[in-house]
Length: 173
Image (cartoon, rainbow, N blue to C red):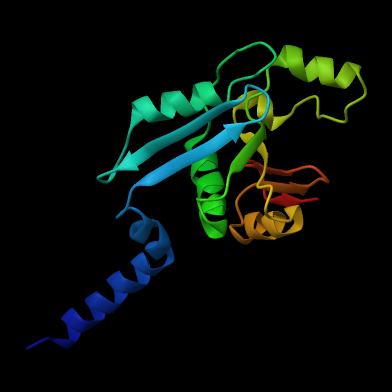
């Protein structure tokens, strides 16, 4: 027979865990990063999380895949960013091609973009491996923007050619 104290403990435990239910539920399956880089013409299909653990070899492959295409410099990409982009991709179906416009951006490439008049931030989160620009050709960018905003993680920007996501402060443009 359950006691009143036992019942209240169970309720308290459930209440404490409830906000994390999606994260806990998502741990059950494999997580896949499946994308095409428009600049390097490379594709990657990597299982980066399986059996309740991150696969660091796969994460290194993702880091390389998202390298600066201008200098070939590689930076560690924030795992939260990988999780975010994979989650957005899954909303629309992983059978659709996720296209990467920009992952990590070296300082040299960022300065080059600024010198030719591109409106890129001098302190871009791309420089830190915290930002990604992407599209899914079959999906309207406004739909991608709305989906990205729904996660309430970092910044989300809508551009004609792509959607920007990052793991900085929550903001939208």
